[in-house]
Length: 394
Image (cartoon, rainbow, N blue to C red; front, side, top):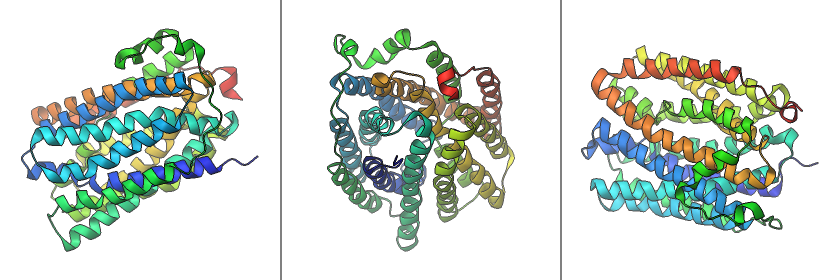
């Protein structure tokens, strides 16, 4: 049986080009926002609101996808909105406009995420979920290597000229949209039980009451972690605060994404062999070490080591968590289950980023990163007590 199918390849390429566009701007974004007058607190609020928007839409559109039995229309619309948001950032620097553009970008992510992950799940078997999701994350993150690299080269020749970079980022976004038209969707499977219900943006909370007990137990741990896992923008700001240049900050970020891309697929294979839970917990342990390191470090060489570990953490958790969820819910509810998780996770990101901004302003970076590290250790203890179902063990 062919594990990496044509559809998985195309979806992975779509994610790659989208990430080239997004990550071309991501390491520059906090620096750009600071230059136009955004405070640490406002940056945290911006990231939090944007992620909350993505969160509410992920749950809603995940359910819409399951109800209709269609995946592709949601995927195409979602990637289109994210592409459109890029040139918007270059037009005006007013805070409300920046919030609008960032929110449109995250809305696009919310519309496509559940449907896209359901497509990936439909293309894989229970035995190779980790491999498939790991491959997709690896390709996705490879875009996060090329994107910042393009930004680094651009800023070398045009230092401080951020606006034109937002326009350039539109091009790979368009390429991603075009690739979605190469996907051939399988015959739709309509979830009749969901079709009989009326859904709203707040319906992400409704699935909780009908979801399997294993799903609820798992989500409690995942969301507790998300509550303190703030935007990576704060890691970049910490490096910038220690005196690193824009070039070094972006360079370290490229290195992180390269490690993430290289490790995602092999760690996915390892997760299928050793167990999704075991690999995920190892990933959280690495995360705790990274944040403890960020709390005290001021050496740029050590930042490389920390971001190496951070790349390993991301590879061991991002795709693995979705593969884990897809193995404990009914196939017809995959988009709903993943969309609900992603939705609630994004709402937690609103709290996490806002809280991190507040803690940073009030108590400093050391206290902020130390608290995150300690909470992660507590989540590891909780999830270590989670007992997998017989189906998950196979």
